[in-house]
Structures are given as structure tokens and as C-alpha cells.
Image (cartoon, rainbow, N blue to C red; front, side, top):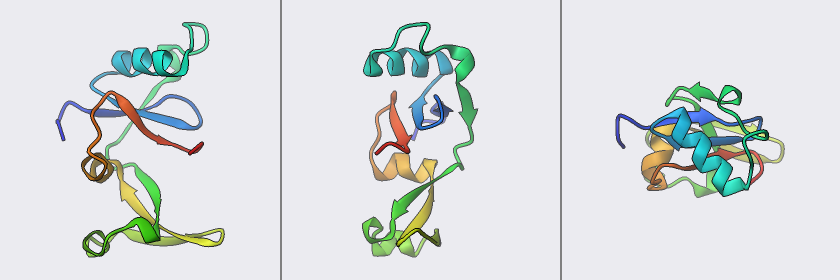
Amino acid sequence: MSNRIKLFRMNDYDWVAAESAELANEWYKRECGLDDSEQTLDMITEEPLTRTFLIPHDEISEEELKMGFEIITYGNGKFARVPFSHMMEREKMKPPCLAGSTEW
């Protein structure tokens, strides 16, 4: 993963991986069909690469389980709490891209 890649929270439910907030904003507006009044730079916050996302436990490989990710129970399921930096490598993300969403 490039050291230049950062994680940006676009709103209450989407995160974008990009080299800058400006690139994240332009990519997100284009992908979502938003105009300048619906998505602005001041709506975006940079998040640490250590920010974690939840992945269903049954989607985690044995090798990943050995990495010591925290396993939590949420609702009726088990999830692994995985840092964004690992998600980038795991999913072979090519920024700019949607890095996470609560709407999936």
C-alpha cells in the first residue's frame, strides 16, 4: 500500500481511500452523481489508517485469524475488527475507491 494513501470519511456511512481529500471528494461526487452543493470538502474528515472495519468472521481466513484481530459478537453474528491498512491489501484496493460503507 502506498504511503500516500489516506482514508477519508465522506459522510455518516461512506469512506474513500485516496491520496488527498480533494481527489476523494471529486471521485466520490462523480461515482455518486453528486454536485458541489451535495458534497463539499468541509464535509470530509481524514481518518487514521488504523481505523477498523468489521468483517464477518466466516470471511476471515485461518491465516488472518492468526494475526490476532479482535473478534466481537454483534447482533447474531461474529465479526473480526480489521484495520483499514489490512483491508487495502486484502481487497487489493486501487485508490481512489470506496473503502467502506455502512450501506453494504
